[in-house]
Length: 469
Image 1 (cartoon, rainbow, N blue to C red):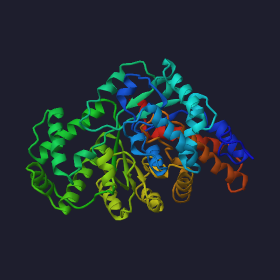
Image 2: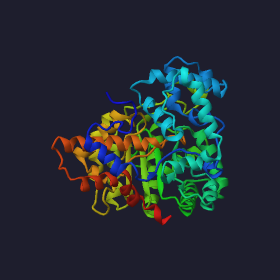
Image 3: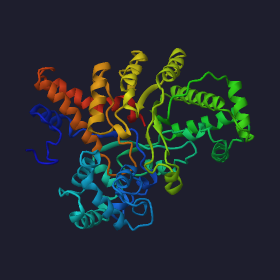
Image 4: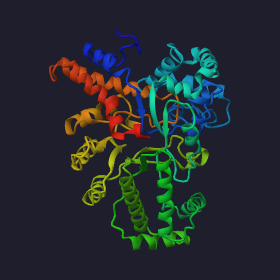
């Protein structure tokens, strides 16, 4: 029987062990999509306790705690940090076979050197030990990042963000590149015209552009797009339930925008048309600047009205959606491809039923200009666990070129999430190792090891070309 979470965790064969330890383990991390707050990196903060860095904002843990019968008072409510941690410690033993069990103990090992299992009987000692370590300057957030061999981080930033913290980081001696990513979801959220108008009012001030019509709106947004580029941004990102690709002329979009700006209701079809127009505009700007565009597709958000009223958005009440993706995604990409304005693109699906669709859709629009120009991104959110990653890697292998994949990302708000790259790399090496030992791949460790290193690091390094920033 193997020991839990030993050095060969998830590695089932000798070949897998060699691939991981000799080729994958020491590769730097390029985390090209996450939700880390740049102000906390810029200020190089230290956390007061383990709850503050581990539970504040982690909706994965919050979902598990609710499912385990924990009252909201101990999750997002007014309980003390120690009380919240105690409830999490009481939940962890019930997360067996959930990725949270692996992640929890990987993070305790990698960041704090703690090999004890977290449970009520060990909670006090673990909390005290980790809290003491976190209060040391050696475990400020920059040091935590450096400890994980991180080379690049791309945060997620709204067009109206000042990027002042990124500027502060560029002026510092921090050895990790921390770059913004342009996320204009709020700028096309026409399903709520009251909220959208408030956003437009903010954009007016930030861009110093009076916005009364579609032209001035696009002018202000493109000004911000250019501002992001001047601050090192080369990546955009969109979190959408589905890709919007309805035909919409500029005049139609202008008429819809006029309704929005004058607080007149728009129809469901007008909402979709406006979203389609805006999404296409953003894609053209990305192409013009040579950016990489990312589309996170398929989340059904804020399902619980009660929960939304209780604790707001992004608190663990989202799920996989069953949206129809194929036709609109094909139409969206094809229009850009036909006009020779299709940027490097990464597609992420949340519904595993869309795996084969995404893998084959990416292949439709490769043009030979860049290896892996259109990427089917790594397993995302509910799918970034052992089974989800394995299925994604196998499907990509069968229907594309896994050798050109740009690897893993954390998509996390936590500074303790970088071991997810290790988790991915171990799963990846195990798949290749099993195939070699089964005689399904040649026993050419030099070549296979190179492919592993490409997937873990070099493909992303070459694809994003952050060295120019």
